[in-house]
Length: 184
Image (cartoon, rainbow, N blue to C red; front, side):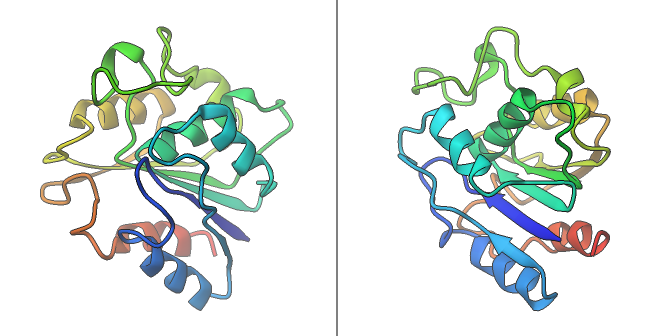
């Protein structure tokens, strides 16, 4: 099994709870990848999808995306051939795919958000297990985005009261490890 983490906008794999996750996953003897995604302050979807493709996710892979990284995972899954499967997808504070609902109006888009939003039907063909983690006090991505993604993906939804955007104040997310360990 391997775990791939895609960080969010304006971040790197050494930020937030990401180093903690790496340590915990590797402690299980599981392969862990958290690439430094190109242009994190002004990301382009094609570059982030390419970075994910290079890691060759397969049926033994858990994909974890935080914020914009979660959007990139969903867009990557939309583009895959029907034969491509991943074990599980865990989305943390991930925005809606709808352009009209992007978190910060006026920020650059470069393909992350569309007028149509996500094609949940296509995405669901690539995994039988989706988990959404979202906090009611998220200051960047509305709680409704988590509910929308959970509904569209028929996902397990884990709601929080005080995690915000799972940003720099959050050093550990044991609920993610519980999901990973459930598959190891």
